[in-house]
Each structure stands twice: as structure tokens, then as C-alpha cells.
Amino acid sequence: MPNSPRRYAFIYWFAASYLLLNLVSRLGLTWMSWHKGALSLTDLLFAYSAGILFDIASFGYLILPFVLWLSLTPLRWRHHPVWRVAGWSVRLFTVFALLFQVASEWVFWEEFDSRFNFIAVDYLVYTHEVIGNIQQSYPIGLWLSLCAGVALLWVLFSNHPVATQWLPRPVLHLLDHNRRWPVLLSSALVTLLVSVGLNAQDSNQRRNQYANELAGNGLFSLFGAFRNNQLDFQRFYATLPVNEAAQRVREQLATPDATFVSNDPLDMRRLIRHSGTEKRLNVVLITVESLSAKYLGSFGNTQNLTPELDKLASQGMLFTQLYATGNRTVRGLEALSLAVPPTPGQSIVRRPNNENLFTLGSVFRSKGYQTHFLYGGYGTFDNMNGYFSGNGYQVLDRTALNKDQITQENIWGVADEDLYSMALREFDKETQLGRPFFAHLMTTSNHRPYTFPENRIDRPQGSRESAVKYTDWAIGDFLRRAQQHPWAKDTLFVIVADHCASSAGKTAIPVEGYHIPMIIWSPGHIAPQQVARLSSQIDVAPTLLGLLNFNYSSQFLGQDVFATPKGPERAFLATYQGLGYLKQEHLSILNPKKKPVTSAVVEQAPAIDEARQQHDAIAWYEIASQLFTTGQMKIRT
Image (cartoon, rainbow, N blue to C red; front, side, top):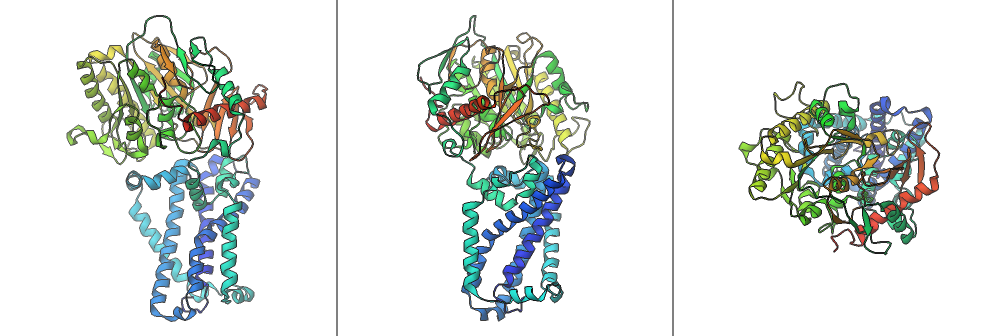
């Protein structure tokens, strides 16, 4: 084929290679998800038939610049030696890139059970951490060598005459035509139609989410996520009249301890008043990376991964029905600090105009506390440093540690025990200055590549379960060391996950993939108990302040679970586009440009008024988006 005078020989070769390799990718992903997804024959037929459509659509984008180039260059250039060398080089690089895409999709699927999405977009931004993570987790050199070797064999074979001998004569005749304008116009038309008429979310047609993901195309999904990582709620989602939505939220925020400061429906400010004396205790909020409830013995795990946490759960306050708001660390940090439902698209932690917001830290500062954010990694990742420093926290991350203060580190950060040592030093400083402190810690060890210091636990390096057990050991070690300091007896230790290890499943928002633990431990201040009320990460801040008996002016949309009258509780669970509202064993989901849907999450769930629940879901998410975009989440007096 390199010696062929066919003007569009490369296009035909590229199309065959691209479609075949995407088929190989889809087959591999099917095999990887087979034991998880319970895929039916109908699911598979949909996945592979719709998959061809998305593969062709993504190819239309990729091929347009090549069509333009080949249409504008003279045909006689094909015989020049430089053209032939360039042709071989381009083909070799093209196949290598396609093979690398396939390998990348398999790695991404193994971690997230998903095609490329907004997480992959973030990974393209934070290349240092991501590339380092891949290098430490996988034999990347071997994989690249295999990709290069297979690419070379592919190009050699596909350019051999035997590769086209099997084609029927009519197809060979079609390949021989050199008319430029039909090819150029048809390529432009296909690209235009795809841009206007096809969306990455159009693959979501089956109840089985694995089938929907298999139907997609990695590149198409990646570019779709890039375009839609910030979404205007008013434009893309079902809405209510804003005053009606606000009134619904106000009605549900009304509690005996709260008084609204005005009658304006959009003013969510409330004066929170408790009887009795405020408890001026230090507070250490530990956000643990990827700690699903399913790993704790307290929730039925039999692998003995969390002996320390299970002991703390028996001695302190264990929340058994708490759910994460999202599937990223920034979502957890957003919910825990702001106490608001997740806004669609990007987390507020990473959005513009996110400074001077009303946060848990701002309440503590109003009480004379010093507030800290301590992170074991590099806080430039996901804009953590920028967000917390812009909201009044003193920030310390990996860069604050000297070499002799680091026991072990990987690309994501230092071992958890080193983070806790840094925290102990800071808490001692605050105590010497006579100031109470609130500190929000974010761990990193329970993250791929799952490495940690040797001789800490009885499990090998490199697995999720081992990382969970090390994380558990480090928490126990931290609390034992903390008890040697005088400030510890007057400190609440709050341990909660940022999100689950995996939030993928057969459904778009699998509830079990958002279930996380929270333990509040403080001997002498917190009696052993279990709290079984359904709650969300956005309820942590007001609940914690309620335990301290604080009087304050609140702008939170979360609720103190102990001050809220018993009744049907709710939780917020979201992806970057799907916004879930869990109540009375039913999950309502809002999606862009679609009607809300509600389904039972357990068998024999009670009958509910679906329209009312969907309207409540719309109201909460609409108001959260409204408050942020209009600046009403900023500190107001």
C-alpha cells in the first residue's frame, strides 16, 4: 500500500485499524467486567451495536485533518522517498498510539469500571502525580515496548499484499477512486452531524451501567467529559421556579434549634442556638482516602483489615448510615467543609470564585480557633492548597517536610504516619500559644500504588486490602501517640472517608458504592453509641458543631442529625453529571437534558410519592447551584 497511487489509502487503513482495535478494547473490557456486571445477551447486543456507532463517530473527528491534508496534496508526491518514509512513520505512530489508548482504557477501567470520564480529564492536568502513579503501579516500560513491537508487526502485515487479497473486487474498486470532493464533503458532514446530534451520554440506554460503558468509546467519552466538566444547572437540568425550590429547602432545614434571619426564600442563613455551655474542645477531622464501609469489621468484613478502627467504633460514636456525596477526594473535601450538596460538573474546590466561602473552618475561627489543613501529598493537586488557603486555613503539605521527617513516600505523598507526625508537631505549637485548634487532615496511603513502610502490618505491599490495613494501623498509632500529649484529653477525633474505594456498579449511582464509615472518638466526652440515621457528608459539619453545643450563624445546607426531628432522612450521592437523592429506600437521579428517574434500592421498599421526591431532589441541587453561582455561599454577616 505505500507504493499505491490511491489518494486515500491511509484513510482506509486507519479506519480498519481503528475499528478493529476498538473492538479488541471492547472485548477486553467485557472480559474484565463479566464477573461484575451480570450482562445479558440484550446488554451485549446493545453494547456492541451502539459501540460501532460511537467508534465511527470518534473516528470522524480523528480523520478530518488527514482527509484535508490528503485532499490538498498532489498525488505525484506519493512516489517521493520522503513521502514513503513519512507514511511508514505515521502509520507506526498511529498504531502505537491506538494500542496505548487500549492499554490506558484497560487500566482506567480496572480502577473505575468506566470509560474515560472527567477523572481522566483531571489526570491530563495533573500529569506529575498520574504518570508517577502509573510508573509505580505498573510495568510501564514493558507495556510500551509491547505496544511498539505489536505496532511494528501490525504495520508490516497490513502493508503486505496478502492483507488485501481477501477483499472482494467491488471493495478494491471502491478503494481505488481518487475523487477528492466527495470524500472531503462527506467527512465534514459526518463530523458536523456527530457534533450536533451525538452526545457521550447517549450511550446510557440500559439499566445495566456496565453495558452503557461498554457501548461508549474512550476518546469520545474523554472529549465529552472535557466539554462538560462544568454544567449550568439552570440550563441542563430539570428545574422548579426558584422561589418554590428555595421554599422546599427552607422547610426541610427548619429545626427546633434554628431561626431564619429573614423571610427571603433564597436566604438560608439561620441562627443556631443550643442550651447549655459551649464545649471548647480541639477538633481533629481525619479524612481517609478511599475507605469504604465494607472494609471495616464493624460493617461485617471478616478479613481483619481494621482492628484499630473497629476498636474505636466500639469506644466512640459510629455512624452506620453515612454516605459520601461523590467519588472523588475533592467531592469529599467540598461536602465536609462547605456542607452543601454537590454541584454538577467540577467540584467547588476546583472552580473559580471559591474563596471566602462559609465553611466549617470559618465557624471555628469565629470562636477563636486556629484552623489548619494538612495533606500528605502535594496540595497543588486538585487545587486543595488554593481552596483551603483562600478560605482562611493554614495549609501544610508534603513540601513542609524535610527528608529526615519522611519514613516512606510514593508519587501521591508521604506515608500516613508521617502526616500524623507533622500534625502532632503543629498541635503542640498551637497548645503552647494557648489557642484551641481545628485541623482537617487528608491522608494518601490508601491509594494506588498501595505502598507503605515495612514491618507495620502482616500483609504484603501493593494491594488495596494491605493499604487499608496500614491506614488502620497508622490511625491507631497516631491516637496512641496523641494520648501522650496534654491537649488530647480535650480533643474530638473525627475519622471519616473522603469517598469509597469504588463507586462503580450495575446502576448509574450504586448506593452501596457510596457507603462510608464515620467515627467520633473522644473518651470522656463521647459515650459509645451507634447512630443509624441516614445522613450525608454534608451533615458532618453541623452535626459536629451541635455536639460542641456551639451557637453560631449558619449558611450550611447540611443538617445536625441530632437536632433534626426523626422522620424520612435523605442523603446526596452524585457523579459529575448524575445527581442522586436517596430517601425512603428510593433513589431519584437528575441527569442533563433528561427527566428525573426514581427507583427502589431495596426489595419491598415502601410506596412513595415519586413526583414529590423528584421535586425535592431538584430543589436541593438547584438551590445549591444557585447559591454558589450568585455568591451567596460566601461569608455573610
